[in-house]
Amino acid sequence: MKVMKPTLYLIAMLLAGTAANAQTKSFYDFTVKTIDGADYPLSQLKGKKVLVVNTASKCGFTKQYADLQKLYETYGGPDFIIIGFPANNFLSQEPGSNAEIKEFCTKNYGVTFPMMAKISVKGKDIAPLYKWLTSKSENGVMDADVSWNFQKFMIDENGKLVGFADPKDVPFSDKIVSWITGDKK
Image 1 (tube, rainbow, N blue to C red):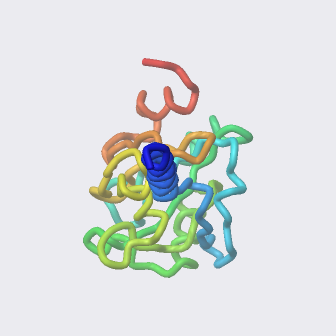
Image 2 (image 1 turned 30 degrees about the horizontal axis):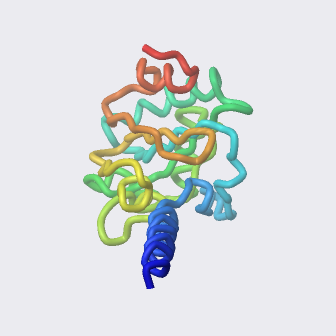
């Protein structure tokens, strides 16, 4: 009977550890839709840093599209990518269809970084990826509610959430650029 107690304890600890690990998904576990409606498995981004941004066309921060595009042109490639997710969660500032949003971004800002289909980034209809991004119980790192359009989430090369930048933080902020380049400031 005494031999059984340590064995049961060991089994219980292993099961608890497995359950804790099962709660934490990776960014790569999600598939989203592009703005054109195609499946986009995020697993194809393994090995890249990813900046995930919820966007809107009629927001005071909409001009950030220009700097996001410049950031993408400067650092985008085999090690870094930006993904935009249009969302209409804040004062109806993204009322357009996916086609209208795509035309707006291309015509006005020359956006070439991947844009995804319009989603919800908060509330009862929150998209699964954004539930993961904003909930520590999902991502294992932090709670980070989306406060407004153009909030930026930083995903490392291993698909783990490592931080976020507020909507007012411009794309070329020290926080974002030092994360992309690996400079410790």
